[in-house]
Length: 434
Length: 167
Image 1: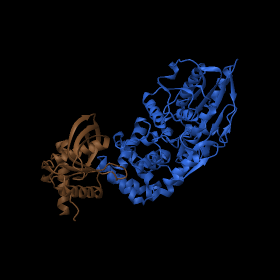
Image 2: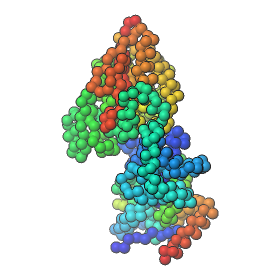
Image 3: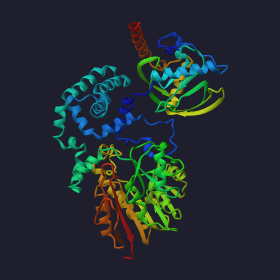
Image 4: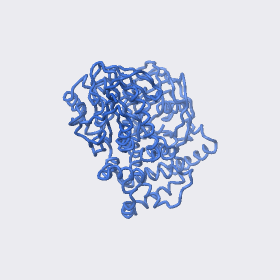
C-alpha cells in the first residue's frame, strides 16, 4: 500500500476547519503519554502546511482569488484549498518552487481530480510569475497585511492601541515549547542536565520557578522521564496561575474548569497535602486529566459534569480557569482566527460571568479565588472582573505580582510574546465580610 | 542481489492465492528484508509477497512517521473486526491511482513473527487499513476490486497503455 499523500491529508484537515467549522487539534498537542504509535499524527510536513495555511489564510486567499477570478462550484472546494496549500508551499517551504508545484499538481490524482492538474499547474505558475506584484498589493488591505480578521483587529487595536500590531505578529509566529518540571520528583538543574544528555537544550525562565523553555519543540516521547511524571508541557504564562493560590497543607481547593488538567496537576505538585476537587463538563477531556494525574503519580477527586449544576459545599481556595476565546494562544491554534466571530465573545463573557458568580457561592469568607483566561480581550478579562467587583460588596481585588505582563486595575494581563509566553489574564479575588 | 520488481495490475499473477508458510527459515527472512527494501524505495507503507511474485503468506509493513519501525507478518489471520473507516488507498501494484475504500477501523489478528513464534496483536487506524489491504493481496484480491466496474476498467486500460509505452 502507498503512503497517504501529505497535501491530500492537509486538504482534508483544512476542509474540516474551513467548511465544517471543526477545530484542528493534533494528538501530540494533547501531550498525553505514552503516545499510541498506531494512530499517528500526520507527518510534520503536513502539519506545517495546515498551520501555515491557517496562519497566512487571508493573504493566501487574496493571492488565490486574484489569480482565479471565477468562483469554483462548491464541489471543487477541495481544489480551492489545495491551491492555498500550493501557494503556501511556494512562499514558505524551504524547497525549490517547482518541487512545491509538482507536489501540489500530483495531489489532484489523490483527490480523484486528475483532470484539474493542468488548472492547478497553471494557477501556481502564474503565481510565481506575478508574485512580486501580488505581494505589494497584499499590503494594501489590513486583513491581508496582518493576516487577522477585521473584527479581531478592531478589538485588539481598541484594547491595546500600542501593542495590537505586536500581538498580531506574535500570533502568526510558532510558539515555543515550555516544560513544567515536577519539583516533587526532581529539580530544575538536574532535569536540565538530563535534557542536555538527550541532546535537548533548554533555558530556565525568570519568575516561573518550575519552567524550562526548550530551544526546539520535540515530541513528548523524547523528554526524559516524561511517562514517569518528571515533566509536563505547559506554557510559562499558565505556570504562573497555580502559585497565586498560596497553597498550604489542608486547604480545601476547587478547580472548577479543570480539564485537561495542566493547572490541576500543578496545584498538586506545589502542595500534595490539599483536598482538591477537579470538575469539568467534558467527559472526554476528563480522561486527559485522569491520564495526566496517573502519569504524574498524583491524586484528586475528578467530577464530570457542568460546573453550573455543581453544589458541593464550600472551599477556601478556588481556581476558575474559564473557557474563553483563546485569543491569547492563536499561535498554537491558528484556526481560532477563522472559527470565532465577535458575537462569540459576547456569548463567552456571559458564560464566564455566570461561572464566576457560581464559583463565588462556593467560596468561604476569607477565601481566595483566581480567575484566569487565555484571552487578550478585556471583555472576557479586566472588564468582566471589574463589573463583578462593582456588583458585589464582599470582594476585594488583590494584586498579582509577576515580572511578566501589565498590572491592571483588576488583575494582570500578559500579551503573547515572540518566542516568549502566551497571552493570558489572571485576577486574584478575596471574599470578605461585606 | 537484484532489487525485487513489483508486479503491476492487471498482471494475472497478482490473482494467485498465497500458500501458508510452513517453516520460518533464513530464506524467508532474507526475502522479507528484500521486500522491506523494495517497499522503502517505492515508497510504500506495506508490501505483500504476492506483489513480488512469491506466493507465500508473508507481508511487511511500516506505517511509522520516521520509517524505522518495520513489521513482518507471516500467515496473518484477522480474528476480530470493529468499526468502519474510509480512507483513500493507493497500491504499489496500481501506481498513480487513489480511491476511497471502506475497511474495519479496529482489528485483532493472529500471525507468526520472524522468529517463528505465533502471536496476536491489535491494530487500528492506518495500520489496520494497511494490514487489511496487504492480506487481500495474499488472497489474490486488489483494492480496485472494491471499485465500480467502470472505474476498474478505466484504470486497467490506462495502466495497460502505460505498460506498453514503457516496454
